[in-house]
Structure formats: structure tokens, C-alpha cells
Image (cartoon, rainbow, N blue to C red; front, side):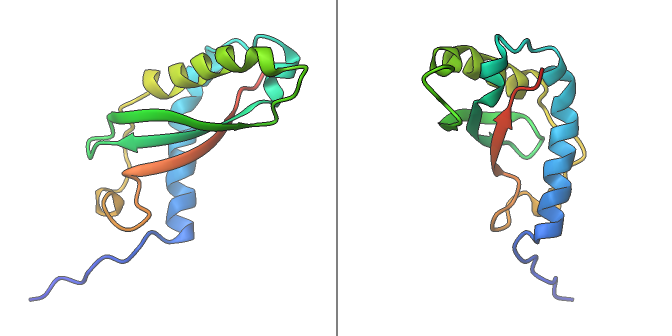
Length: 117
């Protein structure tokens, strides 16, 4: 009996995974302090690489959006807080193993993350 090949991640499945990851990260996000209201305008673009067991293989901040002259001094604090969120709340649980290593699977996820006061 031949196994059906699993196709690429569907948009609906990706939305479900991102929602699951976001809810699992929330307890760590709730512990972070936004250093100033202007810092809440900074969006960190994050590359998250996960192992099959949901543990963190690597984490990297690729870029920032929303940085202005008024808030640029907060970028290092935002980066430290965002890294603490992603490293403190892994391993992630309950992600579908069959969608780990497919094209656009959850092995590698890109997030746009903003600290919330």
C-alpha cells in the first residue's frame, strides 16, 4: 500500500500553527516589560528554526520595522525581550509532526513580533 505524499503547508494549517505558537509564547511575552511606549511601535522580524520535538534549534532577528528616531534607542531592549520570549517558552508542544518537514513547514517559521504593554 503506497503512502500518499504530504503536500506543502496549506494557508489554513499555517494559520493554525502560528496561532498555537503565539498562544504558547504568550506567558513569556506577559513577563516582558516594554521599556517605553515608543518601544511598542518596534516590530522585530524573527526567524525561528525548530527541532522536530519543538525545541529551539536557532533564533535570529532578521530586521525591524517601525523604528523611528524617537524609538531607535530601544531596539536593543526590544531585541532582548523578544529573544527571551522565544527562548523562554520553547519547546513548543502540539504541533503536527506531519507538517514539520514539508515545504513551508513549521521547521522554520518567520514571525513579526511587537511587544505589547
